Image (cartoon, rainbow, N blue to C red; front, side, top):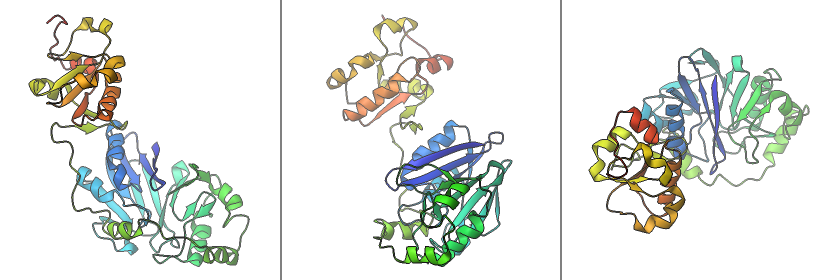
Length: 351
């Protein structure tokens, strides 16, 4: 299985990518609206086809990226049917099975944090994705959206703590930099449920907590009841068919650059001793080590594309130019190596 744990620092939310390497089918668990470009860039770079987004519940601290991802990929949206959200393609309930290539993900209804909480278990990989139901050394709060401490205690003990001790636990959030735990660890050390805590112990703890409501609840909950539908789909840069990489760098293809060379400022950031193999027509040679000091000399009347031998140094050049205030900037994907592989023309440095 291909597995990635992704993080949104603003809401401390974990998003999980699971995929079958053979079929290239993939799902995302708990995508975050602001991280959609990042997540889809990873899906593309790994050569995957996103089949479904799975939300563990109606989040109160961030807006799900499910709806926007569907607009961009035609993936299906799945969440608990009891939530009664709109735009849902797959209304899930306890015992449902989601297939991802050769892998199966079992749906567990684990209400208590909210009425519609789900956890997802991949038994073959011994992994459970518990959303806010069970956190590392903690659990979700129970004071809004139909939360109920007694139900949460039962959900965790009957459906999560009943899993084998060696199963890895991946929560929906963590606020202290912890990435994963295990069923055995949480049964022993969880501060609210571990060590054979009784239901009265747990309910007493939860009912006496004093917590402020999540800062974004007024925005997040209504949006998530529409699976993250937003009024306007963010538009990509309109000056070129730009794509953003998982590293967060805008890129364009060599073919597009070659067809629009007259409308661009092309910057070669190789060192002067690397140019024997030729240059792209009309390109300006500004070695990367000199770029910061030369930004005032770069024309700003056209979009800028950068290149080097492989596209790695020129990716840094994009960041440097962005920081200097240039907006329409992109890296040539794969640099001169890709340019030559595409059979595109080069000039001698003297030309």
